[in-house]
Image (tube, rainbow, N blue to C red; front, side, top):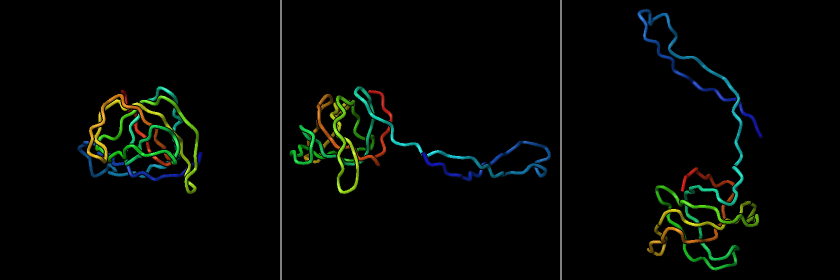
Length: 133
């Protein structure tokens, strides 16, 4: 993990009769570690933002059934299976077989129900968010 030194300006406001004697700000230095993307496993729940292609089978050579829309709350899923890693034009990622834990609209205008299962490719740099299904 890489470490970076960060400067955070923290405001300290002290209610006091002698407020002119109390500094209002102070610089605080500390180390921040970059956190790598967590490792996903079967049974994990998460939300993912942005648009993703949904397929019946893993692989970019397989037909795309739907493309997700960038929903405000993201696509909420439960991991059924973690597939193989794959690189696309220098970008790594992993294939995930997931079950939707909430219904959602897709690019064709259809409402895809909760419990529907798809494969999609999750790039390594894609941020994911915790979600309890």
